[in-house]
Image 1 (tube, rainbow, N blue to C red):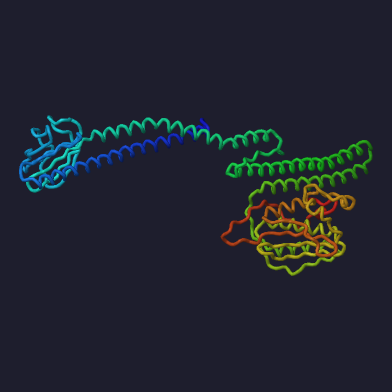
Image 2: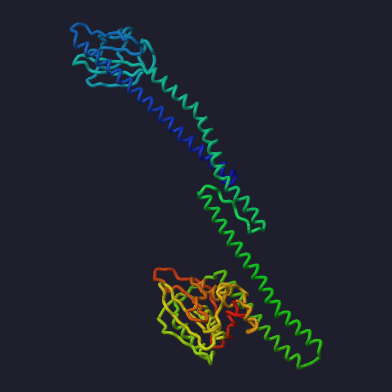
Length: 480
């Protein structure tokens, strides 16, 4: 919620500053503790060295203990007997109570000297046995240690706000610089959202994540623009295709009403029924294309592709007389998909071949890697290379066919390719292997292994023997 109110820049700055503050606080405490520990260890080492010096002096003398004076203050010595009485001491400590108890092992601790000592401040008291009868006690002042620790603490506290302010400033500027391309992309995207899909968001010079984001957005915009353009043309063409039969029907009715002739009404009824059939087929094709575009999920089933090809060949033999229908040996190949839709592709292709073949239509099935390839070939005039991709556009008819066939919607090949793509395959016009004719190749992935997911495709009813011959797929009136 905080990020939503403050924005990415402010949130990142606050978070970075908070993290640095915690790190600095922990580091400052650690530095102070380590500094004090090192200084105290130095004091202990100094006290131990002086105690050793006193012990050496005691060993070299036979008389009363002697404690030499030091050229600096802050360090005091007492020599104790086994009963804890002070035998010798630094100036001012002879009459005072012992700073420690007699001991058999070296000991060290921090304490405040007892009343009467020169300074009532914390000292580091080190006791070391000097033989069986004596103990040397050295008290080393901690004033210097405490002063150094206080100075270090004040320094850390003084630089703490400055470091946090610098961290916040650097983070604010850095995040702002990093987000500047994002803001440009956002501003441009808002402009593009107003309706001009031909524009693209700017690409940052740095080849980083934001650059890749901009490339992805431009790619998405290109797809949206292409899809929008296709839909615009689709709606325009569909409106035109629907307007034509409606205009024809209206003209027929107006003529029939103007002439009071019963026989004319009979002819008009027949013509209206033909136009209605054409409109119904067009609407069905449009609905199927919409379902294919939406990729409505349906559980696919196993299909024996060779059986489907064989069935379509049998249908073609019954309807294509006197054309010869040649079918090469069909290998047993299985795919996953909607059998009715696969049959529809083959029906469209074979009807198209029947319409344009001179004498022979050939069907073949083969395996290429992990794909099954169905080839439908005729020995007709063929399709120009420049038109082999254009014929798959919706409502596209080649000019030559307008004078040959009538009644097509121009959606047959578009539907067939959409079905193939929904099954993970493709439909193309292959390069001719002979001097003339056209070869359509339907490529579909073979049935996957058992551990691979099944394909989801939209479903439609299967064609049967009563299926109306599909309009021409290549020339003139071919539905696309």
